[in-house]
Image 1: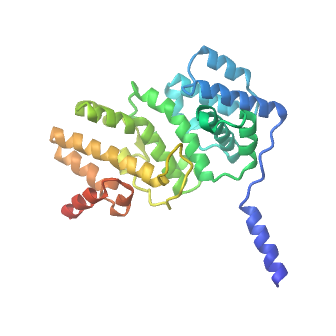
Image 2: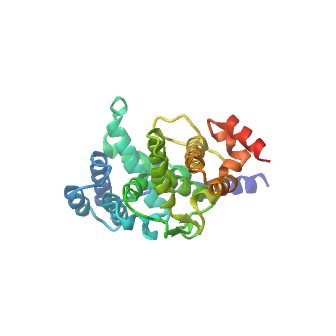
Image 3: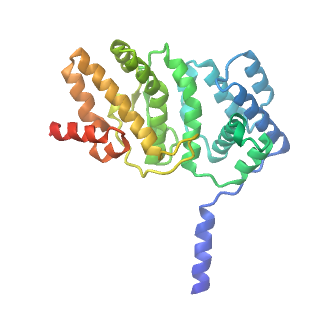
Length: 296
């Protein structure tokens, strides 16, 4: 019985570990070259970037390059399903190698490995898939942010369930990254400039998520986790759910300033600002709790 139990345990353990990703020499060398290219121009803009990226195409890298070029164009293609949908594990790992090569290059006190060494290390590791999913959407939101500078997305509906995301955690990671790219930094800047009219302008232009305004998305009760953020010691939800709460608070304040009580109530009672279980992820948790207690 002990032997059978040991075999079962080993089988279960093996099921949770993915084999390392093996690339041909050409795919590997082109991945490293593409990562170095990205690191020197992470906005993915310009004819030189496009020309060099296209010269590195292989069947393995073609979707990665398509996404980079869409980011650089910052046009309507960035919200197409083929780019918003979750790639498979192997491609997500390629994106993580690109991220790690970039950080290795810019963090000069840490730069001791070559880009090829970093890529080999990433491709041989079993990386938490939550980190992989976050990294993909984090890198992609540059294009979303640039596109949203002038685009009106109010007639766009993003059906999160259609994007190949595996579970509540991955759906939450997707939503938090997209809203962060579209409005989080933008709202902070506009608030500091006291531009409530501009905050409301961008809020009105936000896409729908699952057919509803962005602030209706509250399915963020997934387990918190440590993550490998760049020079960040916060947990994932402290950084990203806390950031969303700040964004919502700015939006709420802008609505209140213009005196639209119905819109203010709609945002408050249908958003995570009215979910006390999530307040602990905000730096303003005491204030949020006080407002919640007063709203009963």
